[in-house]
Image (cartoon, rainbow, N blue to C red; front, side, top):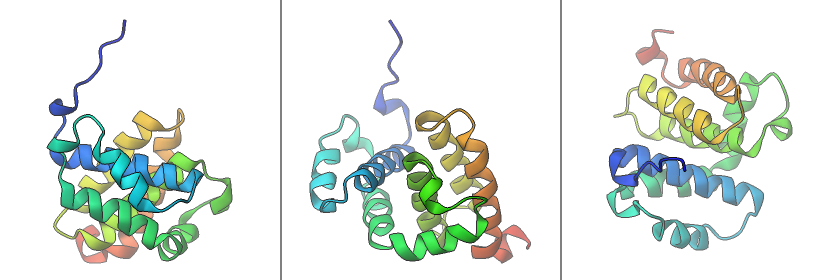
Length: 148
């Protein structure tokens, strides 16, 4: 039997990112009202320990701004937006939202967290692709911080 990592062993921001990613993923597969997705995720194990403000921002901001966020991301892709997996899309959307709106979080932290999410939920090498796209995007969104 595999060991289950208990939600309380993760920090609050990481848990928020995981839950928001799951919500954005769910919305990408079935674009229903985010209120229903939000309510479902609030019942998930470990939600009480999550950073609720970050969760709200990432979930609702990523869905609300999906068009402008995807337009920021697309120039950094080597394929079309439609060809990305739903996990890659969800990771890129939430991380791009965080890069744009959570300037208190260093860009390297945003990218590292996105890589970890892609490793956990995505395909074998999806994290490498996410890393490359976000690295280029960080240079565009945070040129002073990245030195670009």
